[in-house]
Image 1: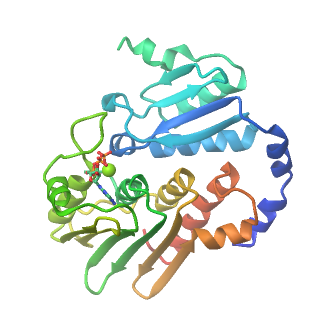
Image 2: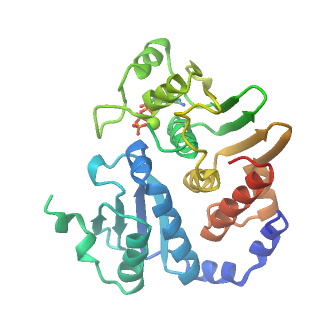
Length: 121
Length: 182
Ligand SMILES: Nc1ncnc2c1ncn2[C@@H]1O[C@H](COP(=O)(O)OP(=O)(O)OP(=O)(O)O)[C@@H](O)[C@H]1O
Ligand SMILES: [Mg+2]
């Protein structure tokens, strides 16, 4: 059972202290959340990313953006590393999103098979 | 049309955020005795002038530059019409916008409610700085959520931290189940 009291506990949780020490994130993950993204299922994708981030304390932040301009390839997830290098993952679903974050952010390995390059477009 | 009401809610609220709203009110109202389901969103964003207001209701105008058609408002209008309800879009430049979609609750084409908890938490994650007041009413039962209040309780912890966003999702799901909105 959730209650507003929980927020006080979240406030004091140990996680919070880890977050603070982590400081600046190594990766920025961007999810397209315009009508095209929502229709294709971007919302559960974002949610899966947040769950993995919360569980594993990956050094990443997740943000949302509007239409990326490739509506037929939504849901789209872009991962930017610290140098600003962008990897675009397309046709993502929650399961793929978990794989992507474990590989790319967890191990620092681009997950080629889900990238836009792999679709040949 | 989007698959469920929660998705439509998120999509229209995203318009408000893009219009630089600082305050956003969202209501879901289901009245079984009147066989009515209402989605209502009001923002204090930049608004639209009359010309733009007309344009956005004709499919599929957009001010986006990434593609040539806008989908959100035409979808919303289609939803109301399909469910033998009413569509209302009012806006004043510099003041804000009100959009309301009324549906016959038991209409064949009325989409399911969908995951309102996830839609609302997604909205808050994208715009933690916006004051969002959400209210749901099913017959006589109500649930409300106000992000300003949440921020007070969080006392400096970011509203868009992953653990807080995930908590909001579950909390809203739970409270909507309690008022039997589904
Ligand atoms: N709440 C609002 N306040 C101000 N302007 C709005 C609002 N909602 C919509 N508009 C204007 O109407 C246009 C059309 O909106 P619509 O949701 O149909 O498409 P879009 O948001 O441009 O693209 P899409 O929703 O398909 O991602 C927007 O580009 C914007 O200029
Ligand atoms: Mg829109």
